[in-house]
Image (cartoon, rainbow, N blue to C red; front, side):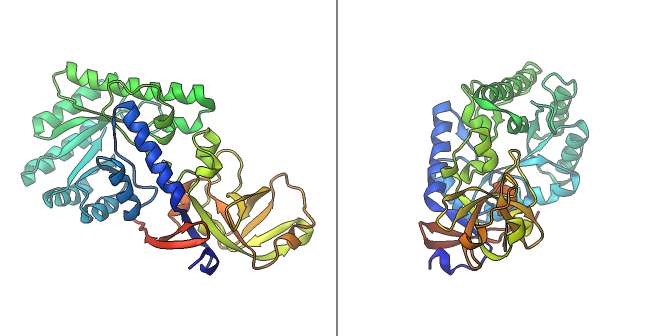
Length: 373
């Protein structure tokens, strides 16, 4: 089978780029002296995770219990569930742990800790827990100097839970510009998470693990002194947001969407394709790449062309500068096959239930992926 045989829209995965990206991040973790625990929410695909583990990853990070269940069923035994745990999910976590999966949960409040230890006491179970640290003010977690930080650790210790350490995700890195800003944000992430661990140790709590990470900070950190593991996810595929940050180049983006020209609006300079937001997602990224950069069928970017608009099943390809290109319809007639590079690989991948794995024009495999919680 070749790419030309695929129905559209289809998610294409460039095998060479994928393998190169996986190897590069693993080498980066080794150079920084930390373990790599990739976040698998981007790919949700066992063959990809297999390659990450084979490259040297020591466990995985998930964002849903479904991910934990799917990969535990494949034999992955060391999983961090990196979304704050709620009481209603503790029974499912416990079930996975009792089946032999070391599933670690995170929390950031006394209330969540009390609920966890109450469930543990009621069922004779000892959970593994990490406390989430806020290192950038972007989302969840406790500040390193928050009075609640040692209070949470005390509730866990007194309730019989196992405190493994602290973790953080520096989402503010996605708003940085340039190498200096990214390096500074990576150091902020490291320093604040390490400081939180030191607070807990000073209060008498063992805190063996310090887990940090995002793809941008992983690749721009100058030191991870005091950190034990690195988490990153989108690096396996990369996307236009990562390109805009300077994290990767266009030739590193492994995921694209194959689409077909279905019509034209010549007076507007529009080419209509069968990849709308149901294929690309509604994520427009951060550098005004529309809904994605348009490439030819071989994956070569077509200068100046973006998916500038999207309805549910229709994408509008036109010039990024808004000018009407009178010859575009002739150059891209109905039936022309194009590829679109995504703004946000996680969001675009989630629109599909499989990847067509390609090497050049050849489709070498079809890898299933899953969605849901």
